[in-house]
Image 1: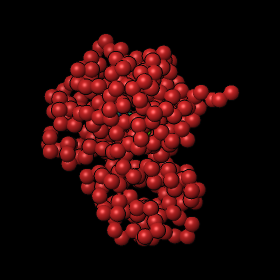
Image 2 (image 1 turned 30 degrees about the horizontal axis):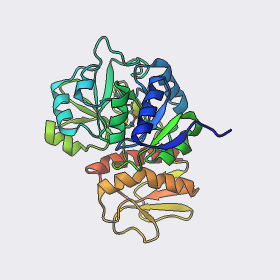
Image 3 (image 1 turned 45 degrees about the horizontal axis):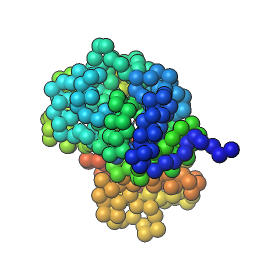
Image 4 (image 1 turned 90 degrees about the vertical axis):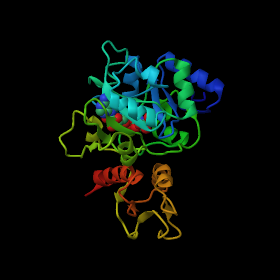
Length: 321
Ligand code: TXA
Ligand code: MG
């Protein structure tokens, strides 16, 4: 008998409606956002959320992002601070997740929020994500749709390769156009803190709200930023950053016009937006070619380069000898 789970389905209006019914029944659906594909479940359904943690092999202390259609939906679950209002007006819908205090009572599963008194709320811009949340009529909790610790998925095929039969349905909306996860910012207090650099840059955020703080890996901020504890974004082989040339046995991932002609190039012109959109897809490609190791050229630590370097540094650190 043909396997019915993990099926990639084009994101037509009909399949989105079907996916929303599956979510309503407590099943998992993978869906596209502009950043990466998410593994979605009804945010109010404890059993469905538990299934998401199990499918990913993700530790339960690491909370999920809650996806909403707009500010009106967000306001039913969290307290929106002034800073959060300003950030949402500037960047929603889009690649910014706001960590805010949960309202009491709040129907979002405690498991989804890992028992914290805050929730990370995101309003995705991708029309399929928007249509799916609208059809369900309530928030979708969704981590990136990959096995815990692996490279994030930016196509439906990446999801199928990583999670396969564990997902009931994969809505295919084509490649994610931003390609790197949302920026996570703690907007609870007076001093906003970037917990994870991502699709919306620090510079863009500071243009709107002024200077922001950044968590560092060893900054002692482990409760605020549980996800930073993870082994993360690791390809299945060793990765070396700031490389100028490939050593024997290494696949080379370039950036900019000085990349050797036969190597993969995150962006020929050195465009960080293009590089972010290509990053995970190129890492997946190198993994599939079964390269023994990857050497990546330096990427400038500005704008989206911060998010790109964050993912590369973690991938490199996890395999360092
Ligand atoms: O772009 C994205 O954010 C994608 C798409 C699917 O929306 N989602 C995503 O989810 O990257 P995930 O689970 O891979 O990463 C969520 C991050 C984790 O680092 C987690 O610790 C953090 O957000 N997070 C979630 N809720 C939080 C909270 N209440 N406080 C602090 N950090 C939180
Ligand atoms: Mg992830």
